[in-house]
Length: 388
Ligand SMILES: *Cc1c(COP(=O)(O)O)cnc(C)c1O
Image (cartoon, rainbow, N blue to C red):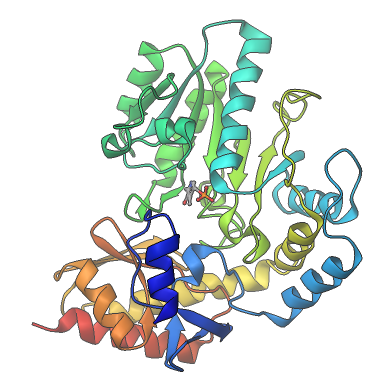
């Protein structure tokens, strides 16, 4: 097939792609170039928040494209300001910087934390504690922030000033804070790429308290957990804590590239002209798409996300070959007896698109997936997990 052969010839070989080439879709339904149909439990890795070709999103994006696709951040644009206002109202945070990806949103968070500390305490107080098994992006700095040794080879020298603590271990966090001159602690409320590991509410509460006492900024990486994915607007909201900086991306604009870094009271005025910027960040078309997504993530939708997550857990309870299910809302990790990779391959053959996260099968369906499709897909996964 020409798509595959052209990909192999012309596209840099950074991805070990699965044998699927989708031509179009509708909601949680995908169709490949041979006309075969799939139920999508991946949403393009938590990006297609309301599935493929969601009518309201298509309308918002195409109307904006017909009016103004770009003008640069030298000037004011309405979709960007509408989106920033909406995000602040939803979260209680104060200001937003827009970029184009998760890595960039984290880069901005890191720069802001370091500048906050530099402005207040001067040179040297720059270390950021992140967690083992975390994932924060693919740039040299966000790879540094990522607490996995496998990402810290080949591309030396990496950005210095990151220290890795053990997740859910408050003593280790305290020790790392004692040993280093820290400006921030950065975490994912649920580690996504690291294996759908939930940080305990108690751990986050305690961590937030310690950080507050020492004026160490709390940075929530909500790139994957954000925008309704876990049943709250942001994943940290389950723990009742208030971060100083929140980064998000993936599902924010429902399928268009957009990152956002949100600032609380302490950090809202840290960035000033000349300290940061982006050519595309907050692009009107992406922002219009994001407004259409974010404005629909309300309490009713979040309740549905929670209910569907519980439904999946219920369907998989005591299932043969299923050892446990982790996660919250529609961000779920299934620990299977059989290798997760085999299950993903067989699921695809049977028309269900799922992902892996370390040794787990990871589910990130569109938030509005219909029960019927969800149940059908989970039963297929369940059968595959139970095979000898
Ligand atoms: C995907 C992800 C990133 C990186 O996002 P990109 O858009 O690929 O740069 C960063 N942090 C977390 C938690 C992610 O899941």
